[in-house]
Length: 201
Image (cartoon, rainbow, N blue to C red; front, side):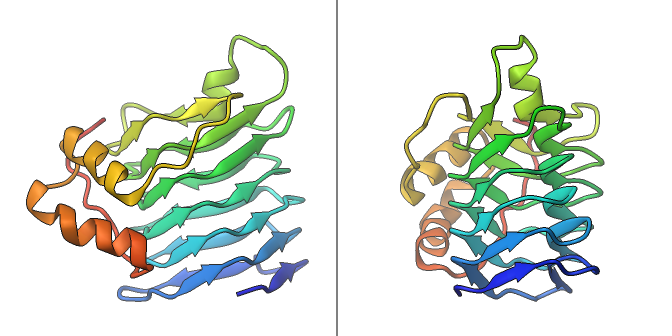
């Protein structure tokens, strides 16, 4: 909590390994080589309320089964993607505020059999170009098997509550109603979790 992670040549924060959780809150990430945070190998941390200030290629990368909760973060200044979910990565990504640099490849990109759940995020894309939506949120539809719903481009969207988020996941056949109470508690209380996604949104 409250750390500044900056200028590291091997990347910023790495969370990896099955069963690895942890909570990373109210930190500042900037200028780490290649990425600021990396979640992989079935790790499921809670990453919340952090300032991602860019100066590198990727903000947060989820891959090889890495997931957990990524919520309420502010991201800007990334050369390629603020959030990249690929190679079987997943996680529940919601209530984030993402600014996309002119010339960047995208705010959040999902590819490579990713299983990300991306709900209720606000993306800021400069200008009124017709490709603003695709630059904000890029989905390789042939490979992505997650769920995307209720995101906004260049218009602020109020944060969604855990209960409302769970209702959206049930509506989208992402979450079994029998698990709704436990999932809402996990989201609200800080207990790291991941959502198994078996239906495309």
